[in-house]
Image (cartoon, rainbow, N blue to C red; front, side, top):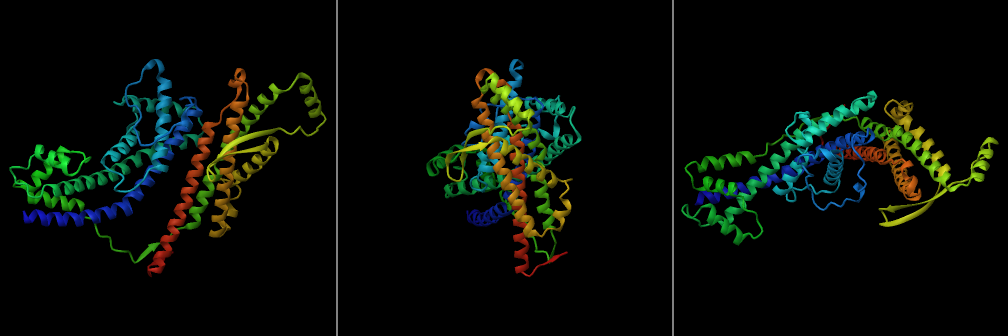
Length: 462
């Protein structure tokens, strides 16, 4: 059995190198691809809501997730198909958000069970083969509502839909490859661990029944994978064992990449300007929100006023006098303090400021009037400018979320159906904030990489 012990030593070394490679390269790629996947689905989800293809889930924001779980994949009951689809996609959106923003991305944490959960989420809908003839219910229905979402939309919305579908398909392929690499590592590591409890077992003793007992006794809580145990038996005791063991080592080998003498210079300004464009793109969404908020404000104020009060306000308007102040008391959770904060909001002042900010954001969008100014800014100026606008939009998002809840709670139940919710628009703003922050972090990471290369004496080509 000396050759098996030598193999264990070689396997231990190969596993360590493989683990380091997975941690430093593949897990970084995995999170990036999953973020692209989640952002792309969230864009589609928002469009589905706006088009009325699914209903808003009233319990979406209250969902508490402790561990990833694949939503229902069973057939739809045609009688309540819309309700089921709405709940499934809401749950799916929440699960992807939890995966990208709250899940741990470490080799040890992403065990075979968790890899299976991620695999199930990514393959929940087959985005590469959307068809009304798809074999799975979710893919079939997703194909139908995706086709419906493309009808009667402007070119920009159609571009968002097609771009999201393309990203979902590409990211699925990339994620599946990384998940396979991680699964292969864990399978090899499992066999490495199991061999430690097999020490001294003869070929006659090495069978699945005996191994299961040994694993349960020596490693309580460790799952028993019969297929992997049978692979161990073949690798250690069969005639083809040496060749099988060699194949395992080859599969774990990490290709040595020689450092390049030069690296093509990255346009850091272009990265930052892209981030500004992303945060500027919320201007159209804010315009839609403004219309809804003003209608909600009228609904709320009208139900408060008597007939004579309405006449007085009408006369006031005819005489071009400023409208009376409208003060709302809002409540929101301050995540930095972990406490509920209450503040009074002058609605008309807020709307004027929101419109002013929206004009600024419109100028910062991809085809906005501020492009020339952005081009002449230095990197430090652009970085500070991007961070400021992200903060401004985050503050708007917080206030708008509180306003949405305020209108829904303050308007009497008998006329609450007149209040227009803004959850889909808020989701679009949140996606833009997440994407702009991601670009900002990408800039910082690439800038740091360039600085490290300079310190190592590696030139950067212009």
